[in-house]
Image (cartoon, rainbow, N blue to C red; front, side, top):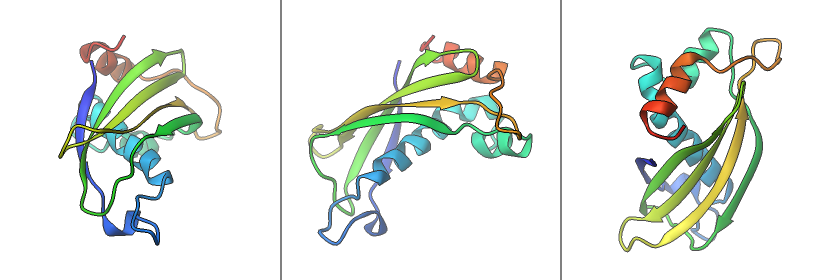
Length: 138
């Protein structure tokens, strides 16, 4: 079941033409991912909590399709779903929809691998798996 996060485009996230700069969509994916996994971190910022413990969750593959631009001040809904969970990896799909008219703006998928401080893959924490299961994405 998708988890929803509301986002608003800031002026600094746009290019000289006033349109959202496309890499910012991937920034919003991280915002949604952190919001999705907040219950797994006991109220802390999820990725910061894992970083402090010596772990990271770098992206290893990303794709997106863009349908309509966003501009500074536009509000949108980001839907985040975990679509695949491996031993040390997970793939997240996202869909961004403009709030004012429910127009689909972008969608795509990003895959991540959980690694230790030596950058070796390591099993996903049980808290992450439990969060995925509790959200109905397993």
